[in-house]
Amino acid sequence: MKACVGWRRFLFCFPLIFILPHLFSVLELHQNQAVTDSPKENTKKFDVQHSSGDDAPKKITKKFDHLVLGPAAGEGLPNRLQCRGVKALNKTYFSNPSHASSVGDGIAFVTVFTIYNNSPDALADGKPSNLVTVGNASYSKPERSMAILNVFIKFIQVRMPQSNIIILTDPESDLSLHQNSVTVLPIQGEYSRDKLMLQRIRSYITFLDIRLEKLSQEQGRITHFIFSDSDIAVIDDLGQIFEKYQDFHVALTFRNNKDQPLNSGFIAVRGTRDSILRARTFLQKVLEVYSSKYLKASRMLGDQLALFWVIKSDASFDAKRFSKAQAFIKEIGGASVLFLPCATYNWTPPEGAGQFHGMPLDVKVVHFKGSRKRLMLEAWNYFSSSADISDMLCLILKSGRTKYDF
Image (cartoon, rainbow, N blue to C red; front, side, top):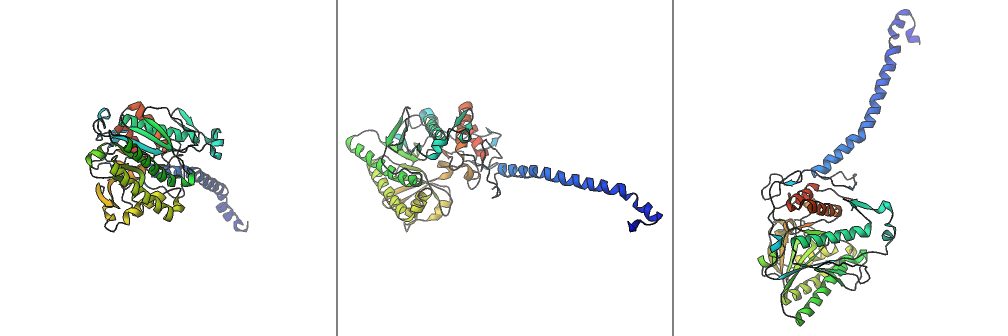
């Protein structure tokens, strides 16, 4: 302590003996507080980013096991659903389900579905760690798929009560459904996870062959077909498509996406013999392109890439038409193809928060693709308790880009 030699220096240094420990304590307390507060600040930012509908940082991969709601996209825009909480301030344009498709031709929904009973996941799904809970029900992995299929059926039965549902499945799949207007049709094929999308097109073609054979044996009411994924909710009568657009054979849905403008989760086929023949030829061409060019993408997206290849290979087709959400018809390879905007006929939550700028008031199909299967079940539970379709759509809309645990 040479610096404090002498009484004057001692008087100068003496107060530091009391001040310095106090300063160090304050500094240490501040640092500890900063460490404690840091996770709260990060969590708050994450919640805000999720609820605002903006893209979350790439490092954040959390998927939620409960509903996460934020602002509804499209606020203040004309012809878009407006919400206050989960209450709709304006009403969507729906037909009366009791009169939907009651006059004219019949409608049948066709979907491909299988259960992987022998997979390692299925064998272990009895463990509590593999169960998920939605509302008052808990589901194992196979039970989740069945729950989604059942909700798919229920939406159709509520919104289009006079339509039929046909489920194309693997003959080895243990699928038993005992519901009115639901038919399970086993079709031989390769239903492994890696080949399911490829098999789906094959199953569609086989089904059309079966239908052609029946048409040659019977005369009567025409039935039109809507081939769809099982993770969609039918919101309004789709029979209007066949009444409003009289001159198409096949209908596809499109969005403003440069590389993948077509979504294969919704394909409509007019039920006349000529239309089924042309639709079969069209899908056979898609299958050939799929098998030769996009087999590496057989688990996902290959069918959509093949669809687009077939469409854009027509020299007269202008892909710029996909930039406007307006229906149009184009002759492609001998088939009259109707292109319907996804914003109305294949609306999805992430695109609703993005390029669709909310939910159009005339939306007819909601597609819960990707990690949004929980939202489909939550939406049905809400609709079952409220019986208000517009309020249910507000709940879906406000989920925005939120991803869930399944």
